[in-house]
Image 1 (cartoon, one colour):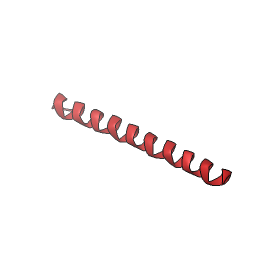
Image 2 (cartoon, helix red, strand yellow; image 1 turned 30 degrees about the vertical axis):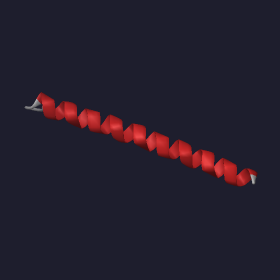
Image 3 (spheres, helix red, strand yellow; image 1 turned 90 degrees about the vertical axis):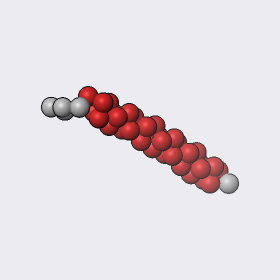
Image 4 (cartoon, one colour; image 1 turned 120 degrees about the vertical axis):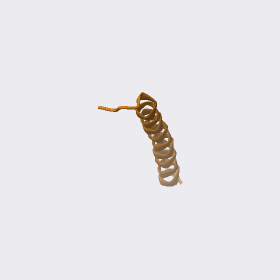
Length: 39
């Protein structure tokens, strides 16, 4: 489907980076909510 493999690879890498950052943010958010409920 993609005529340029390097562009497809860059899109995959960008999605992986976004997912990892999203996971870090959500994990930090969960930890903060747990700390707030414990106070």
